[in-house]
Amino acid sequence: MDQKLDWANLSFGYIPTDYNVRCRYRDGKWGEIEVSSSDTINMHMAATALHYGQEIFEGLKAFRGADGKVRIFRIEDNANRIISSANGIKMAPVPVDLFKKMVIKAVELNARFIPPYGSGASLYIRPIELGMSAQIGVHPSSEYLFMVMVTPVGPYFKEGFKPTNICIMREFDRVAPKGTGRWKVGGNYAASLEAGERAHELGYSAVLYLDPREKKYIDECGPANFFAIKQGRYITPASESILPSVTNRSLMQLARDMGITVEERHIPLEELAEIDEAGACGTAAVASPVAEIHDIDTGVKYIVAKDHQPGPITTRLYEKLRAVQLGEEPDTHGWNTIVEGI
Ligand SMILES: *Cc1c(COP(=O)(O)O)cnc(C)c1O
Image (cartoon, helix red, strand yellow):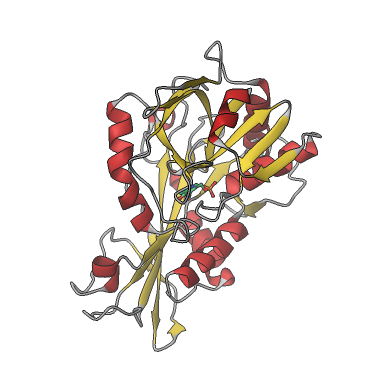
């Protein structure tokens, strides 16, 4: 390291790194991989990404493990998901091999920014695809830019693995019932900002959205999936308006490995009164335990973590997933891609 980064105190902000990796789609095909040391892009002011929201992204992480090796977690799952997002909003899909090659290259080129084992920090990888054609008519772009940027991020739980409160607000939906919720589209985030900011002002860490059709079932928890533990079972919403979280899928698998029954089904709002633990899951936090869920419109408060401590199953699942990512425990499902030589 030729620079001193305070790994343990990094925020989830943006720290410039040395390189990013880019590839352009033109004339019906993807071109050569380019390495850039510039953190800006040049685009036409009439690009479809800017006017009509043709923009999708991914988020995954690389970790320096206990054995000194660098591991990227579930790269193939993210490669497949961005294809699904691309098809969802009519963008050119990035082939799985190209995605993997570019992500690995971005990690290799920025190896000096991969936080050391034990710091709790990691290298966040952000692939992004943009519609680039200059056009005013509303139709899919014919040119695309796919790029992979990385930035080191600090430990999510700086003050320890502590539960937070979340809230339910019926005034806003993040997505439509058969809309873009199942794809990782930037516009979904724009649609969630108003509710998210209100929740933060009221002291909540996130909004727990109800299904947008009937407002009867639990959908998602801001930019994370929701799960709960009820009578020793792992329950998580089945919904066509939520993003299929790689972390949630991993936690479900680890739960099954531990002999815990997993139920992916509708969760009626009232069932929150019967749950023993709850959490929000995603790449950023792995699992963020929930203390209380306040229904702002009805005034009902669901107390999940009675003594404001994370529940035992949430804690076990969180620790197990972290251990697999850090190479402390065997990777029995082949989730990690080891990047050799860095
Ligand atoms: C990215 C994202 C998640 C989490 O997915 P992971 O693959 O676990 O990081 C959950 N919900 C939404 C809306 C997301 O955009």
